Amino acid sequence: MQRYSGFGLLKHSLSFHENWQRVWRNPTPKKRYDVIIIGGGGHGLSTAYYLAKEHGITNIAVLEKGHLGGGNICRNTTIVRSNYLWDESAALYEHSMKLWEGLSQDLNYNQMFSQRGVYHTCHTLQDLRTNERLVHANRLQGVDNEMVYGDQLQKEIPALDCSPDARYPILGASVQRRGGNARHDAVAWGYARAADALGVDLIQNCEVIGMEINDGKITGVKTRAHGTIKADRVGCVTAGNSGVMAKMAGFELPLESHPLQALVSEPIKPFLDTVVMSNHVHGYMSQSDKGDLVIGAGIDGWVGYGQRGSYSIIEHTIQAIVELFPCTSRVRMNRQWGGIVDTCPDASPIISATPVKNLFFNCGWGTGGFKGTPGSGNVFAHMLAHGRAHPLAEPFTMNRFYTGALVDEHGAAGVAH
Ligand code: FAD
Ligand code: PYC
Image (tube, rainbow, N blue to C red):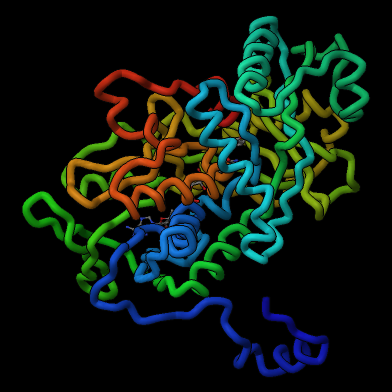
């Protein structure tokens, strides 16, 4: 890792950082690559990193239409957990969790991964039974998850309104103690720097506007800035825009794109050292190391590509947060933003070959792909290297929409849906 002394920092600030060494190169694209990855978000960058590191393929370009990390990877609320219901999903998200647990060391970049626990509060008998079922399933899968009730829950989260007078009293909560948060921009930068160091070309401001397909096989992509760039294999990892990209290649995906938004408050004294999500009252919150409350809830009910989200969602979200944490009623909100998420009918991702030979898609992570970033890139790299699904990704190919073997995770995706 590059380090600067105090004197170095002063020198660079006086020269307006003119000679500051770049963290990654700014290469001119070659005419041809072994693999092109479209999309320089978290999943695209992690795919490039694992392709180079684990499969020895380094003649790779990541083509990003804007700047690296300008999409959802740096717009999310950083919640990491692996407590999904079905064996297929639990295995995939747990694979990711294990990679998270060693990621700072692997990338030599502090991911600020904080396993502070993620609670799902239960406000009805149905809620309680659903979470108890989830806990049982997770334990059988070897994924940590447990229930906490009454006084114990109040003790663990003193600011949470656990009184019977609440409008929707809390009956208990499931908690995955290995869940928590990571710093999202460090994830993008860490993977970018590590991929670059292995020889991957990261090309920014390079929008893909078409696919070059001959005899049903992809041979390259057309870009706005650099014309056609050839490739043997192409991986498309363009969360929020996957439907648009599939259309360029001449097929359709079972996806809808919706805005999902989040907001943060002014920084306040630390009072919440965990993550609380309520599917029922419908809001979630954590507190950042800086003291901001990081808050979110659901997607806009209609499709759209505006990275904003609607006002009604903000009102609804804040009502929920004040119900859960009455002590926040006078906290002021500082910023609000949105991202576009691709949602699948079964709330599970698509990691798949496509009707076009040598073109692969990794998309549909919806509102929950941040936690999947390391695992997604890791199994997608396998697919791009070998031309077939990694065993953990097999249940997530497009085949499931033909066979009907959907992996319905709407319950676990929960609050953001
Ligand atoms: P992105 O960062 O969006 O990467 C896709 C990239 O593709 C973008 O950089 C885009 O510019 C690029 N691109 C698109 N079209 C083209 C083109 N034609 N040519 C070249 N490049 C192109 N998940 C969780 O697990 N936990 C959370 O707490 C959480 N909270 C969220 C909160 C919000 C408000 C939002 C919006 C999302 C949240 N998510 C969360 C979901 C998560 O952020 C996404 O599922 C995940 O980041 C998507 O993968 P990505 O990082 O690769 O996407
Ligand atoms: O998947 O845990 C999640 C999540 C929380 C907020 C948005 N997505």
